[in-house]
Image 1 (cartoon, rainbow over the protein chains, first blue to last red):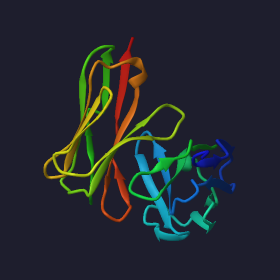
Image 2 (cartoon, one colour):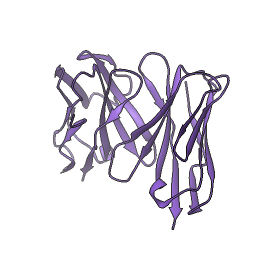
Image 3 (spheres, one colour):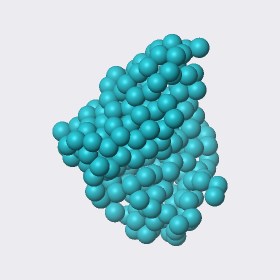
Length: 111
Length: 110
């Protein structure tokens, strides 16, 4: 298996622009997680899905953030409009148990 | 709020030395995982401990889960430069919502 795939690996955008991050989980995993990592706050859980259904989105910072999982093999995290404080590394992870498998991350820079 | 506190936050040692990092909480966890993250990559799972008092060994790494399932430790014997990275502990609250500690950043000098 190729593992969790994320795209793009790097994204640089200007404040106010829409950003879409993509994730393909490991086949057969029924849980998908979106995290944000910064030096100041560490690894923060934003939202997680089970069988494509959002279970807990209490970590989503505000209404500018939204996530979807239209099918078992694809999820997106969208930020609209983006702000400089959204700059971070965003990770997607998938699992079928309590052990999570992380993708390589998307490094987002908002100028 | 459930929190996992890791200590030390940063550790710089010479190759060949031993070290222990700690993960503590006031909450009980169903299981606890340790991950290692290298620069530019996502965290990689090292081990899961489930039973209170459990000890697991992975080559030079020894993981222990506290009897009360509230804390854990990671001991590395004869550290090598390849052990350099961010070590994260993560607690499973029972609902697949995992709580991560802030991590211990380890640097092993050759």
